[in-house]
Length: 123
Image (cartoon, rainbow, N blue to C red; front, side, top):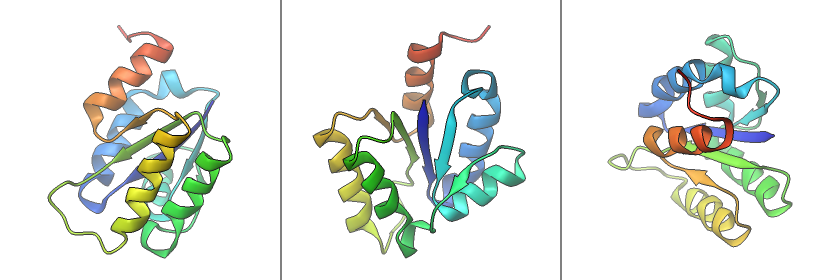
């Protein structure tokens, strides 16, 4: 399983916490991330392959993996109240997930449901 993890600045700590809480489910999964989210994940003790930061093209790099069907799941913790200069890239990534039928969670509750559905609920 290859999973992309992305988080807006206000959600990075929540993403790292989520990944740590679900580490047992992610054993054997390959995590890829935008650069800054990946750096936060590494500091949290997780192994990830980092692309560019989102505003520098990382969202587009991950969108390419979606278009090539090289991803199984995208976890993108968005900050719906913040302004994002790279909003067109974000919209492109989400649209491509829909076009190519790649599961996408944009908040922790949705991400938890996806992981629980794939791996079973933790005790």
